Image (cartoon, rainbow, N blue to C red; front, top):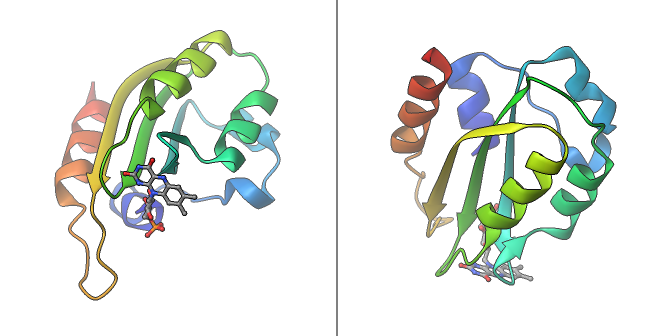
Length: 118
Ligand SMILES: Cc1cc2nc3c(=O)[nH]c(=O)nc-3n(C[C@H](O)[C@H](O)[C@H](O)COP(=O)(O)O)c2cc1C
């Protein structure tokens, strides 16, 4: 999903598991995505967000993938990002990715494109 978004908006994509949180410094908008695990963001995402430096004036867009119920994933990330000084302008989710079919991300991507125009 991250790659589909990155390709549509012509933005670079980074794996949070192998990137230093300092990479966000070069950007005004951070688009962060995670699978839902136990109704929460993946542990790796929480670790990344915890390590982000405090900022002012940056925006964030969140996305998640999940199978049945996304639980508090956005609430948890929105709170953490607000503590770090980010303004979350959009949260989008994709339910039920099936590995045997190409997944349609266009609904989410269109919402992201709209939010970035504002
Ligand atoms: C340890 C673990 C916990 C999960 N917990 C949830 C959950 O609480 N709710 C849910 O809807 N899906 C849950 N899932 C399903 C994942 O969210 C789903 O596999 C993922 O979003 C699909 O993305 P992927 O194709 O990148 O793996 C869980 C998956 C794993 C491995």
